[in-house]
Amino acid sequence: QVQLVESGGGLEQAGGSMRLSCAASGRTFSVFAMGWFRQAPGKERQFVAAINNRGDVTYYADSVKGRFTISRDNTKNTVYLQMNGLKFEDTAVYYCARDSMPRRWTGLGKAEVYGYWGQGTQVTVSS
Image 1 (spheres, rainbow, N blue to C red):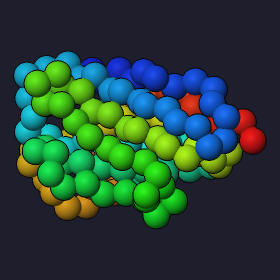
Image 2: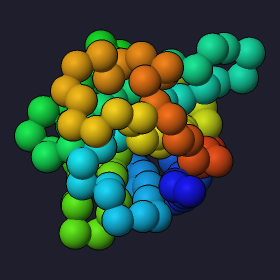
Image 3: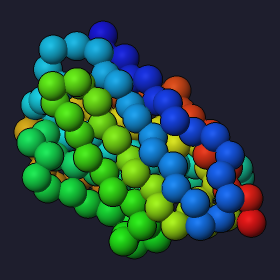
Image 4: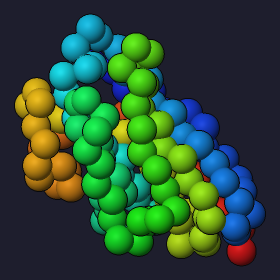
């Protein structure tokens, strides 16, 4: 059973920065793509960013492109989301997720390709 545990959320002012981490259990972390999604109150879960298993291909939602950076450290079974230039509209619960198929490089913006999800971490940006 794979467990994903997010950390690093909290309260930040608009324009500030925050880094989220997601630690994964298991020995196969390095063969699966990882993604970050977010869900604001009253809204559907939204794709934020994804990274392939090797860490050399990344995808971003248009709303975060140029401000957020996804990365991973396969030696630590951890994926990160560096968030700079935070905006009020970035306020949401952020979830990390692990792909259900190994070594997939496409379609990573769709929630349905992910088989495991973390419990989420709250990010609140004050305007």
